[in-house]
Amino acid sequence: MTHFAGTTTANFGQNSPTGAFLPEIYSKNVLLQLRRGSVADSITNSEYFGEISAFGDTVRIMAEPDITIKDYTRGLELTTDAVEDTDKTITIDQAKYWQFSIDDIEDKMSHVGWEAIATNRAAYKLMQDYDVAILNFMSDSANVLAANVFNDKTEAAVLDLSTPDALLDHITDMSVRLSLQDNVNEGRYLVLPYTATGVLSKVDSKLINMDYNGGAADLKSSPSYMGTLRGFDIYVTNNAPSYTSTGTGATTRDVMLAGQMSACSTAQTILRTEVLRDNLTFGDKIRGQHVYGRGIIRPEALSVAHVKFSA
Image (cartoon, rainbow, N blue to C red; front, side, top):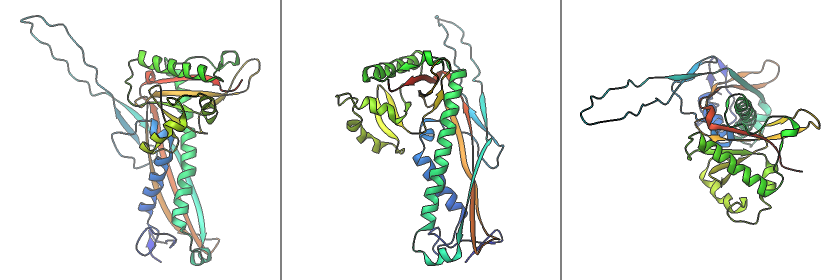
């Protein structure tokens, strides 16, 4: 057994040639697995300025400068504009942790790769929690900030997209609405629940058949990526936002969330992982902390609709 920060480390994986637990490598493995599976990480801008060293840190997001176009006539003396160094900040104000134990006997007797299993499970659970939080944050923010909200949350206003034609027409409408706000085509996304793919799969067309377009999923890291449609990268997930409608017949309804990657910025990291002896058993406790922040940078690059996918 080796030692880290005055404690005995668990010898349960392949993190080093001796099989000892190395917190730094474990942290990177968890974060890599998390990002590989996350829809939220695929649709937000994470190219931020700065590093996260502690909970409560702020991260600077550099804003695109505005340039003024002027008229020119022969002999005109040119004027020069100063490029403003503007930015927005994201506060790392969200923190999650995990902790599990491995008994000494279990560790010594088992041939199972505990490190790989623990890494994958921790990353999966973090990804689920992170996706739900970020996607709901984007949906809630869009309802307050965005200019591309199609309808309110009353039951009477819910859009019935239970037929392929209605759903495809509305996807087109969302694309047009984003274009009217001068959003570029590259990096557009649409997040759908699986009930929506059930509607789309009824259409007999190779252009929009998810089985046909599904081959493009190899080009994306997220397993939720289903291909392209109407200029959107389509992501399908059980973590898609939903809400409870208001008014007569109120019930749980779905949110269609569309946008361009510049809309929301995120910053995240596995802040620390460590191992210590469990004072209640003969074994080791392994724990870690995931921190992140998020912010809406360009509200005009978001679009939401409150819908139902079954009659």
